[in-house]
Image 1 (cartoon, one colour):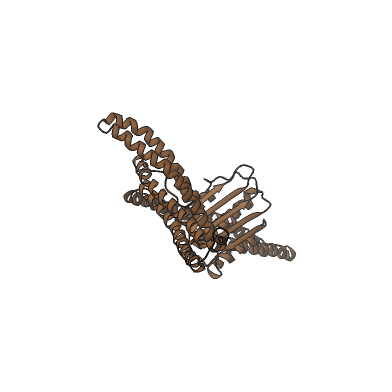
Image 2: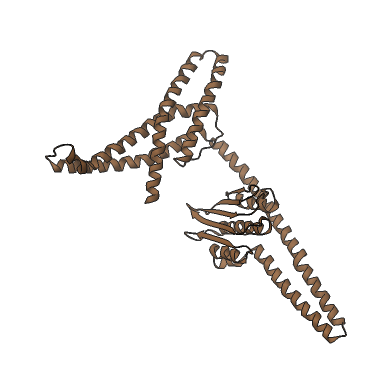
Length: 379
């Protein structure tokens, strides 16, 4: 309930500012109309007039995009044509007037529905029934006006996307290009993962198995029983370390706990296995899909691993929250910073996230802290 009230107040503030901007936009629209009318039959003059008009329209549209983004929660692409900006402003002022009417209705409805409490101090009320009926009417008007706030805010976003957003054909072309890039990124990520597994097996497990074989061979050839027992003891230690390292490699390939107990348990295991203290906050309304859970796990696991290896941080904060069917992940260490987003590990994470139409951002100024944020759609 509190979230709805806060959103309603934020939308009302956005409509109020938009109502004030409507007067400026109306004057600008009239100025554009007069200027174009004067040079209607003069092509060179029309082009000369369009340049300052387009610049002014761009500034007004940028103000509108900022208002839509910060107060109405609507994100509009910034790649719009000057003609689209002029058309948007020519229509937007009318929607600003509608927003002003809705806000005025809210004030009138609130005044009528509360008149029963303060009206006794202003006028001599002779018919309480009429006041009560007016209160009910005020409540109904207030309800409709509050719904109107949400409706006008939605219209604001739709109008901006219609005039400022890309066309359907452009959107399809952008989507095809994005999918082609994501597919290529997934293929590269798979190849990188295979190379990493091969390197871990070659440099770790294989070397220990070679050492194990050498120790067993020396023990067989040794004629001294005590020396043979010492070599067998070393071989036993090598076999245990090889088994531990093989489990580590298998865990990095894919953790079975992710399928058996879910994402929360897998992240808790990452926190427990880390050599640095990890403060984990995981808020999930329900278990995400396998693809989203897999990517989320690897984002956290690789980020923690990189922080342990390179950051020299005292501790790591990990936050995974599900909001509106989107997993929002933030991993922050308080180390020395300077992480390279184009490095193989972080670049591989960005390709994993992009394959699910997600977004990965890395902020790592020198001196820290390093913050890795990701948004992964759950559907």
